Image 1: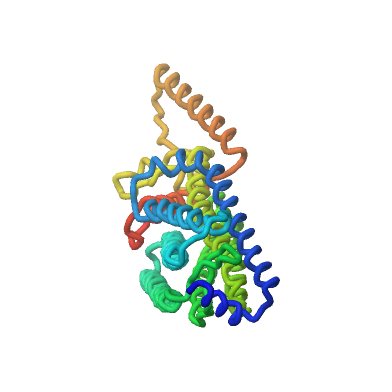
Image 2: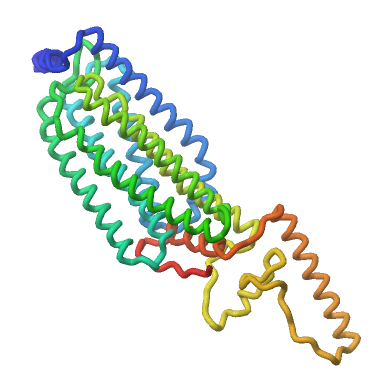
Length: 380
């Protein structure tokens, strides 16, 4: 049966055996690049994961983070056997591995985009509940369409996947038309999220006369890098599939999966690292509770200003001061000046703005809250 499917694949591919061998060799090399990137990035960010992510309580975001990395690593290494091993694989192994890759990539991409949606919704806050709801509906609609396309494509592939004894690689003898549309709904969703995030960040920085905070610059930088890299590799897969040669189809699947997993992981870690950096330099790392009974917490001097925006904490003067009172007041002033000097040195000239507190709340919502619809309290 493998010989018959191999002859059918050569006939449907429309290329010579030399060209088919070159395309399959390119697929091998791209898979090797994907595995190398995965191992290298895992070794780089493992320390940051232990320091920044492990202490966080379990949530949907944390579960998706680890599940996404596990799916990518397991299925990429399993499929690497056909690329690096000289052993003969069974047709059953090829069928289960390739169809498993299809469903695993679908779940992995959905989890990455859910985490991306969580960041965007937390950034929007509770000011636009209708728009937030529409984004969630759009997410489920786009991935419902993608899931249907994946199921149809897998059903068509089911009896046409085989192991080629000539090329020593798993392949398919057909070219399902539905697979070309699998990349379109996620691309449109990611483009929408990127535009919404960019507009929101631009609106905040325009009101703050600049990038506002270090965290906002991290959000913008990572968003651009994530969108551009994923767009390039999705376009590659879309073009590769529409070029029609079956042997060229899987050249970009694994590299896209690994790049998306790496980018998604770094989005979360960079946000946590930036939040910790701002907490250390600004002293506003926690979620500040509001309310009338907590007015004193808003009067804590930060870099020579109160969090409410007025200069220095002012106290009513007492016309009758004893020597003890004067000494105590002098000591209090010296302590305040010393604390402000230390804070100024640590800040390296940076000033805290109201958005710093707001974006810290954003970080907590994205990385610790299970419910993405939670209303983040704003302090701008």
